[in-house]
Length: 259
Image (cartoon, rainbow, N blue to C red):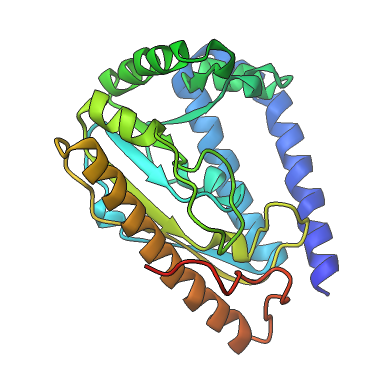
């Protein structure tokens, strides 16, 4: 049953994505229109997850989201949070690698919507280019989303935080909103299986601007790891209680750090 429901969801998801990518081409008239399309895509995906795969997404701490421009630092375990965050942040922009702009159709939408692309081939100059693009997004009042570890990490993997987040925090001088989650338990990064249960995305209290860079780096990592580990533990317990225990080879490593 799990395999069939996962297969049905994946077919529906990719079909909807293809239809929206083509039918939404007129939305390229403006960046705001593209953001509305992205929110619709995210909401449809969450609905399909719930109805077809039996996976619900619960948002916690929505009251912690401040108004105005801010830096959003999210734990990254799967594609699910990429889709889900755009449904609750009204004027979002992602920090992403420039190569994604080359994807047919999808790249057009990313470019038109004002995402902040990092050109890693530029070496040390990449930071100054990122600063300029990020500064423009903040000036436009946007919520700039960055994944501090740079890529999706398996549930329970040791932290691997990069310096990009603290660099932007220092340069932009806006609050940073940490986002903890346990989505990797239900939408694994290298699997087509979608596990039933309740994935949690939790917005933690924002960190005000002005902290020393290294102090901020340590603080945001500690908050994200502590909260995400707690959500993973709760998610594993919930899966076991519902009879959908995560297989041993997909469960978090026992040696994963707990702060």
